[in-house]
Image (tube, rainbow over all chains, first blue to last red; front, side, top):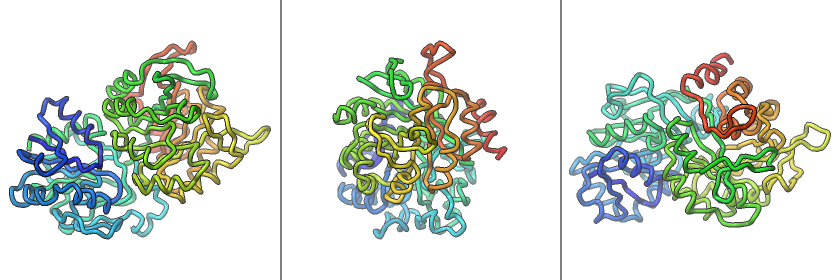
Length: 204
Length: 260
């Protein structure tokens, strides 16, 4: 069953609603025991990087998640800050990330020549999938999602870039390393585009 | 390409949806949940929902109603009305709302912006500045408590201060243009866009897609919000909820951006 990781951050109910409308069974886990039986994981998140890592640690689910994702290769989809904590670290904080996708989260503000760029990056932007990534299967050329963030994921390896978006610079807005997926945008609030992506994840 | 956001702004009073003119004469226009359902179907870019009673009456935000709205809403939701503490803002975010709008409380205590940003992140902190011109001048001052108290502070000065403290977005709301459907305050919008480095949204006066296009032509990629335009139809203001199609947005709004 698709299991949404509820560690106190992010819009859990929005994911539950999307899957209920799709008639796809969904569960919510607030502790390690409730992760039992998860065949897919969704890791939401909003707010600051360090806060997200602290909350995940405090939830007691982290060792089980490590085992499910790294040992048993259960597919996981990180959303927004839930995607950013897949990295090894972030310009926003000091704590190490989960390290499931090699890379680091950067601030748009640290990019030279972008000092006039309004931040956060807020609103609907085009997403261009690379290498026919499975999350975007069946999408027309134009996929559009809602973004709300000031930091972006910088992969160590080009091969982990799954989709790109443009805001001041071309940045990686979807990562994939084997069974670990992450999207910077909010599919749960992106109308039919987001529903399509969440359905694709469910059907992986 | 990042697109301008076309945003219905819904006002709530006594649990129902209302629309005002110059912040007065609220007219009942229906059930908020029903409106959200329609905007879901129309794939609106974003929604702003403001409880116009909460601050004036000094009551807590209506969490039950917020939870229902958030659960129904399939687009990003910004909620405002009655938020006075970081704990309240956090609670609202946890109900599944993307952004909280604050106004009166941060005008009284600007440090509250920093406290709320610390708790939920700057990206979710929206400051709404209700503004009105000083008598016989073009000088725009910020008002609070649903347009009943004048802070006597200039819009740009307040916007810059609150940006510095961690606001993630500024919504300009013209009291004099509210409900008039005769166009936006483009001059103030342009000055605010040039002054701050955070997203802004312009509200008050929108009566047509062309009005919205002129904001985009003036300011570029910003949010353009309206109330009456999305809930009334025709000269007699019959209640009919509508939202432009993707094609209309492209033809009228995005083309204004491309032509800049």
